[in-house]
Image (tube, rainbow, N blue to C red):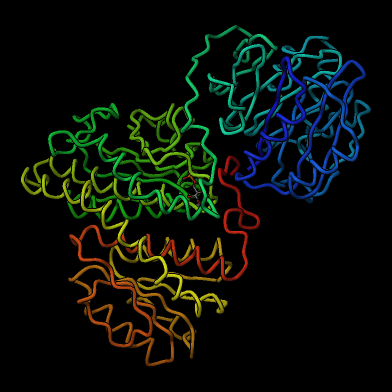
Length: 607
Ligand code: F6R
């Protein structure tokens, strides 16, 4: 979603801001803009489309050498993605960039119209800028103006603000959307993500939710909404937390798929001790886990597919019901929480608005919460009772790949941990499974990746189609759901996933000659049943792409990717890597912008 970067310091900042915007591009955006402040006032430059267009425009225009500025990549929510709606928005003495949504902006708009403000854009952001400006003109004091404005605004937002008569000062507001402060020697920054900070910035502070910050060249202050000063929790900025390099790969998506084995290895190593699962590092309360009589899971998109995978395993190992629901539904449905239950939320970014809302809802109801998160210090990581980190490293590609693979591996280990804790699984069985997950799985993932050319070959035909089906049974149905999502989002092929047995209850009417059906079959117990479904669609002319172990039935399949020999519970995870490569190569062959699919944003911080 929108990206924010702001700078005040000893150096001219337009190139620092531009580099920050380039680093934030992965979040998804459709316009960009910058406000520079010097003793002559604001200079505003905006452009529709790519940051490179903004850069060209700035060069042609000879933007001033100011050392204080804010910049933004906008993912349109209110109003079309043109220059008029691009940020920064300037009203009176206030310049503002914003990530999030102001829910009551119409009401604010009306209030401000009555005070004589006129609006140049269709955005909610301009209304917020005007409100802050109103209070600034009344109080003459930035912190009071921001605090008064926040009292009136509803929604989820992060702001970076400058006031025309306060050169060298930046102000940050965080209400529900992430905002970080970067601290260096004689320079300070505000950004949505550590990736946007220049290499010489070595410390960062994740602003507290409901916090305001004042940023100077030589430091910063943090306040709560009543303007009491609060203590900063500084963290070192590591290379991993800002790594946004492709390291010789053409695309982040491919690079990240290639990092899967290492990421699984690193993550599982953090939760295995003496050959057995050990989640003590997560702070999870074992006595609660032992008592669980049900579990709820909430997440969005790919993370939800990892949640469905976890549901399958936990139900199998524990024989307790697991209710998995997309967070955007969960948060509004008044979920029924049984006694001795808990909520597991899964999120790569740790900032997804709906998942965060689901977590908060459960907490309000006194339900114990466990989060599986990739980004340290993210909102979900900070608010959950216990956090199980995936150590997948930074995921830049909008389409999630390595985060999903690591989530499925880690959740398999967590399910095993639960099974062992509650005596459903014996220690020797657990040891064997731990070994398979931590040693065998990374090796086999690399074996699959080494055969990438085979997957690419399958895409020569697939990439020419406009729609496809994915079919699988049991846990494979969840791998199919994720495979279909990946194919849709990066290649724009309309892919639908079905439990294989469900197809003939209606959708089979769409099967026709040459229609691609990707069948995932990894479990011996359902292999024959899936084979029957493959024959049904093949008999109606479908081109079946089979992803299965070499010794599974293959009748009816036109194209085959044989999975390496591996312990059965690992096979679905390996099949997922195959479907990720399938989506990547299909998208590439179709000339799509793989890392930045249209309309999508990496971290969905609005609902
Ligand atoms: C798809 C994808 C999204 C995310 C979803 C949740 O490839 O990446 O579906 O999985 O937006 O994001 P996180 O995991 O950051 O909560």
